[in-house]
Length: 99
Image (cartoon, rainbow, N blue to C red):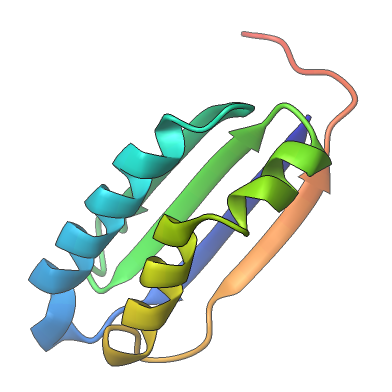
């Protein structure tokens, strides 16, 4: 399994638009083959900080995700919405279990 986790700061005056774009992206991505989880969250102390958390069946599924039309539209919208570069990490997970 591949996990993607990251943060990005959005421009405060663009927060509502960023939420709309993120929700559109999440809905389209959740329908993709190989996507287990794809969610955006907002920081409770700083609402201009968004978190993203993704779980993918494989690196191949994640790679296919980067080739989708909704990813291209999302990436085109980002420069007007973000206040700086994102901090995104990719993890290869050998196993996971519930608590």
